[in-house]
Structure formats: C-alpha cells, structure tokens
Length: 292
Ligand SMILES: Nc1ncnc2c1ncn2[C@@H]1O[C@H](COP(=O)(O)OP(=O)(O)OP(=O)(O)O)[C@@H](O)[C@H]1O
Image (cartoon, rainbow, N blue to C red):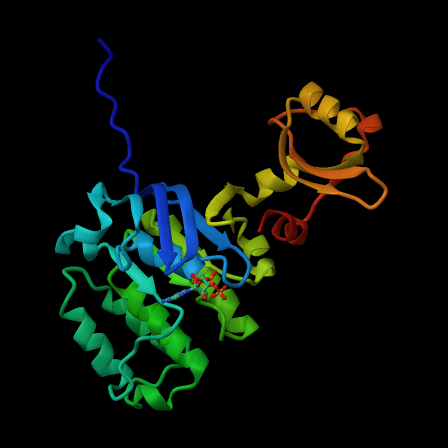
C-alpha cells in the first residue's frame, strides 16, 4: 500500500463548461484548472468570452453544462467561508459612488474575518487616493486602484481581476504588477487576470492562458512557450513528416497563397531540432495573434 500523499487543494477546476446567451454559444466544453500560487494571464480577442468565463469561474453566472469547482465546492453554492477567500475586481467597477473611499473600505471590512489594514493604508497613500472624497469624484484610474485595494485587503487565496489595468497609467501598472507579484510570493495566492497589454505579461513572465472558440486552447508559462513554440513553412507532407520526427504538437496551421502551409508547432522539452528544419522563433504578439 502507498503512504497517503498530501496533494495541494486545486483552487479551481472547470470541466466541460458550456455557456450560451440565447443562440450564441460563448463557452464550448471548456476545461481549465488553476493551482495554488499560479499567476495566469487570460488572453483572448474582444468578445472571446473572458468576462463570461471569469463570472462562471466565480459562480456569478451558471454554466449550461459542465462542472465548476472552487476550493473543492460547486462554485454556484459555495459557502461563506470559501467565498471570503476570493477577491474580485470586475471590469465594470461596482464601487458605491456616494461613499468615500474610507466609508467603502469600512463597509467591506465588516464582511471579512481577515483584513490587512496596514496594506490598505500603504496602498491608499502610495496610489494617491483621497480617503474622504466621494468615489464619484475620483478619476477612473483612482477608482480602479481603489477597486484593486478592496480586493487585496482581505488577503484572498484566489484573486480574479478582469482587465484591472485598463485605466492605469504606465507607472500605476508597474506598481500594481509589483504588488501582485508580492502578493503571490508572500501568500501563495492564485491570481487570474484578463488583459490586452502584452508588455505587462512579459515583465512578470506569468502563465498565459489563451482563449479561442470558447475554450482554453493553450496554457503554459510564457518563457516555456517562447522556448518551445516555433513557426515553420512548407508543404503539408513535409510539415507532417517534420512534426512526427520531432514529436512536436501542431497548435495552428494556415494555408498560404502558394499552396504551402505555415504551422505553429510546440516542441517537446529539450528537443533540439536541426538547423535545416528552418524553424522560426515567435514572440508574445505572434502567440496572441496565432492562439486567440
Ligand atoms: N449578458 C449578456 N447577454 C448577451 N450576450 C452577452 C452578455 N455578456 C456577454 N455577451 C456576449 O458574449 C460574448 C463574450 O462576451 P465577454 O464579455 O465574455 O467577452 P470578453 O472576452 O470579456 O470581451 P472583451 O475583451 O471585449 O471585454 C460577446 O459576444 C458578448 O456580446
């Protein structure tokens, strides 16, 4: 008999998730898992379904089919103690505009067993948010920062951010990313956030999850993708033979005007293809264009 192994609890697990709005199918049998301490940048074109996916993940929207588990419970019926382990910054800020920042934070503090006042005070002063001004009179970027502070304050185990940096200036984005990384290193928080700003992802070398046609089509650390994904051109039989010989996985293929094809392939770890294979390296923008 094997000794019992203490496996870490999976933060979130989605299996065969399907979601439609009327006749429009947005999630199509999507599988995804998030592990403790993972920082995942969710990438997809406008309208790909990122917000819908994050809402389903959090149990805010019910999938038509499939299973969504959060901390080992069904996401739609999660208990209060587990819900308190989640921090969420939605794309549309839901701050109460009549409140001041101080009133808003005091209100939310009352819901959580854990609340890091020192972190709140530190971020409020570093991010230049006036505590006693009505939220409606803060700028869009300041409101977004306040929303991020609110989500970080109770030290969540899962932090979900839907385009959190959209209205932040470059200095604000850099500071936010530093805070995010600090959060993960200090507490092992699982973080998932959607973004269109690829340079921010390059700075932190997160895991990237690419969304296309209602599914997560590829997820891996950025540096691993840069190391292993290649573009190659040739006739279909040549490319078939090459990928078989290298034991590579085909991620995408395009038929070119001259009858040749261009394939995006993923090499197995440690594979060193011969120079004659003429493989081209790719960058993060190529990955976005090809995989979303
Ligand atoms: N409440 C809704 N009712 C009907 N259709 C919706 C609803 N919410 C989203 N959609 C549609 O579902 C699709 C996916 O939308 P979603 O907002 O999830 O995409 P997204 O990837 O977050 O987009 P973006 O990058 O532009 O924010 C879109 O075609 C959108 O029009």
